Image (cartoon, rainbow, N blue to C red; front, side):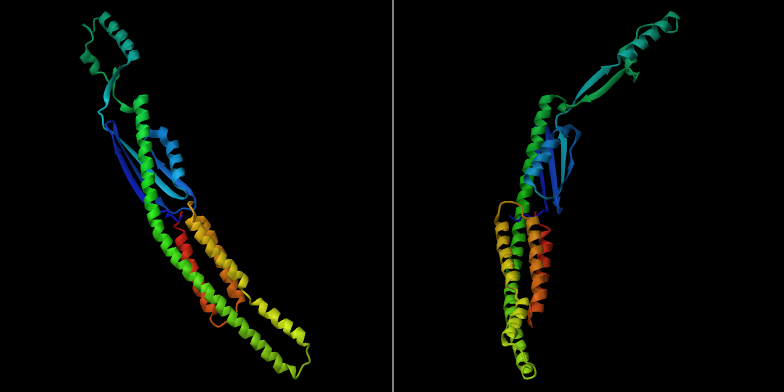
Length: 297
């Protein structure tokens, strides 16, 4: 199956406890390269997120960001500094003994001493139950975003395949025309050699059988039937790869290299008036196909 490596998806899941938003951007890459941004409160789900991405994506650079907004108002925790309180009590007793101060310490006095009390927000997600619920919410959002990303990549892959199939059919037709032109060129070459041999026969004495063998051997050097057969096999294999359920971008890239190699060999062996022009056109089209395949997963 041909899927594009580029895509975008964004999912937001809102619940009473919190809102989780997931954004995914995908671009081309030779391998799977995941760039992950997870808030500290959801650090425990990072391994699960990586596993989900590996399940849905085979290749590409994936930038995945998760944002968390706690919707419940946090509580407040007030903590008294015991060590400071004991030290303060001793110091006040000594001051009273010397007559420097009188009376007891009031709550207002403690509030004016920043070292005495620590006031901080109590995070909603601190307890295990809340953490588990937030983790499940984040995993669900990530999986939905990956499904949406896959849908977009498959849709773009359909357009990519349509273009590649058109180009593949065009290249296959060019190769058939190269084969026909090469056959014409080989026949013309055999005729030229035979005519030349007849011209020289009056001057030189030669064994007819040996001359015929040399003509056949020279013509065989320009025979591209093996290359054409292999190219047809590559074209057929292309269809099988594109129809399979597995990602095939790297395999198609390798197959294009083999197809280009066969065309180069045809160009070096074949003889004919139209062969060079057709070879250049086929190589140009294969290069365009290879550029397109770089976008396939």
